[in-house]
Image (cartoon, rainbow, N blue to C red; front, top):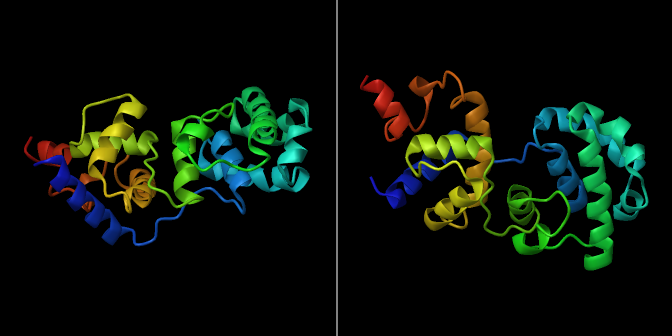
Length: 213
């Protein structure tokens, strides 16, 4: 099966299975999503969502964060893990936002990755969810599921992003990635995937291989 056909079938199956494709992080403005995504590195979104209400109550805008010191933020975000680095990145990214972007979140991956602590995964999420531009968010679920489906046999997130950009319809790519997160948590788990109930098991390489064992 070509990747073009695989893309069509995967997009359609996941869209039918999960009509809604929400971001699992809670936020009310672009800055909150940017900071929440940084906190979510090597941490669950559910944990981040328990931490951010207090964080955003104390620091209400980019200037509040830029004028803070890491020690002001660390106690609030400690349960997210790696809190020293995350607090430092949050303060520094807000300083750069003010210095280089007049406090406004930029709308391109190329500009966003200039911010401290912001990689392509975070940048794509912002571009897709905030600015509604085509985006491919390559997180652990996306990497695992697209590899199992047969899109690639890669481990490098940036290379996977470029592969998927070639085949996913731009208008569907962002929601496709959100649906992969839902599917990865409930069905296509890293350990003991539930292939027997998967909406893509008729064309997934991994499912078909296991079925034929």
